[in-house]
Amino acid sequence: MFCKFFLNASDKRRSVLWVHALLLRTGGSKIKREVKWGETEKMPKIMKLAAAFSFLGSLLAGILFLWSRRGIYLTCAVSFGSTAYHLGMRLLVGALYHVKMRNRADYTKRWYQPRPWEEGVYRVLRVKAWKGRLPTYDPRTFSLEHHTWDEIAQAMCQSELVHETSAALSFLPLIFSIWFGSFAAFLITSVCGAIVDLLFVMMQRYNRPRTVKIALRQRQAAR
Image 1: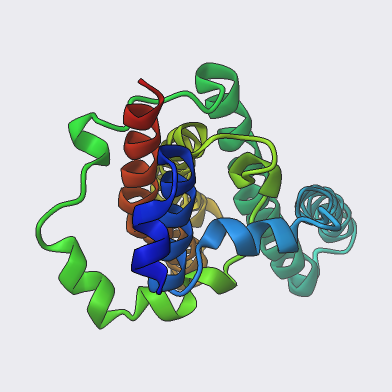
Image 2: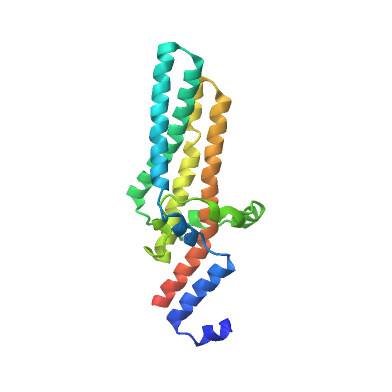
């Protein structure tokens, strides 16, 4: 029944039907879930408040350590400081990429193309099962109410670069273990931070080929 209706539809309606069929086939897209998450748009506020709170907590604990020389305050200062770095660094990296790229990227470049081995990794890690549960910093960036499929595909490229850079910079705090010790603690937080970013990288690289396919079909239909 769907095929008969599809064949009798106009070119424009066919494009819309094809998109909906693809979304149903893939179990729904991350884009739809991101719009739902963004109804309250809490993520930017949460990250900024958490970064500010962690920074102030580190500053206060550091002052208390200098005043009392108690080890518990040093531990708190390092913990709060590490958290402030991981949150603040990600906010800064995202802002710098946005200033430079403005969600504009050439998604045909080699860096953004899926590798032959990626599909096997995604299958083993069951990316399809959990990718829709990840939060989004600014859902409007991936919303069809505000952008075209082509623009969303470009924004996905920028988002991937942000998380890849953040994953690499997650290991910068290891330097501070030279002065504060606790190398294992710094390493664990750095690895955990990098893993979180790599989850987002996988989500973008998993979703983007489908998004690009739709964008290219729409571009061809518009000619």
